[in-house]
Image 1: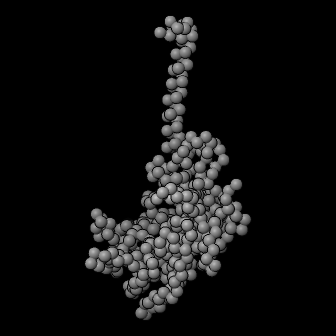
Image 2 (image 1 turned 90 degrees about the vertical axis):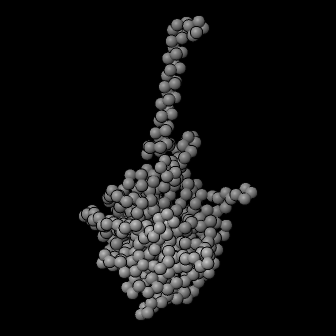
Image 3 (image 1 turned 90 degrees about the horizontal axis):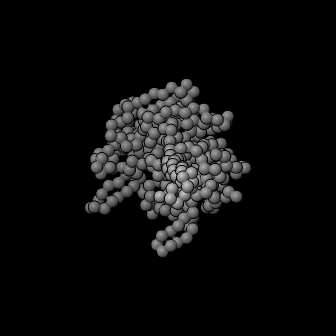
Length: 388
């Protein structure tokens, strides 16, 4: 057909061109699929920060490390903003803010980084790298990565020991000597959902499944390898936290009375197994966080409020009394599940997004930003200035 319309050389040239275009188009589709799903290459263009989350203060209070998202808008080709092909999450990197200069420095490139956390002496910063299944230890004083350690249980969080010399898995199965990079593995308690050792390492608290089909769990405490406490009511797998300075555990339990769900908090004194129950006013949430001094609890009581409880402890017998309760209203912002105290206990950072517009019953929000709540004045301000 082509040789009737065109001379043979022209027809051959057209067929060659069409074939090349077809192959090129096919290769382009294959490259795009690889690029969007498997590559660590970034699109050319000025990166735009898409969200901020999980702010954690350095022990000296001069810096805040946080999770940050980035998008490279070259021509709109990658509309996923580099979504993780496995989980569908937006790209997550690690950034750090200098509180004096307000300068933001990006520490990672390559996506899928978990929430950062500091060593108690402030010399190290660590975070999980989910894409490469590694735990990254960053030397903050030198400004360089100190070590990358392969993770067997990447879904487990880690914390530093009080002397900053070890990293301990919150699943209770791994202990890492940071300087020697020696890794010790321990058996995980059977049927456990969440595991968290006390700050002094003497007690191991974990939630154990009673019925996996209904996700019901109970709280169990262990010392020297032996169980000595089990809660009489079901508990939520998360969150539960130890007081920073004492073997006192705070967790949330629930029970049913005549078909009605009853939820409350429990403060458990591990040495004696004594506990007290309490419930804040207008309680509807499950977020909690101890102040650095361990005498206050921050609770997200619902989507628009944060409540601070002052707690007085006594032992022999153990008691915990709520001496003061103050609620802060978060105006037109939907708060995140996590609250983060400043080292001096005067501020709380939280992630929220302001309402952009309403479309019928639907609400459209701006991207997540970190906000700072001044507990003395109640003022709420964005922690990081807008990029220009």
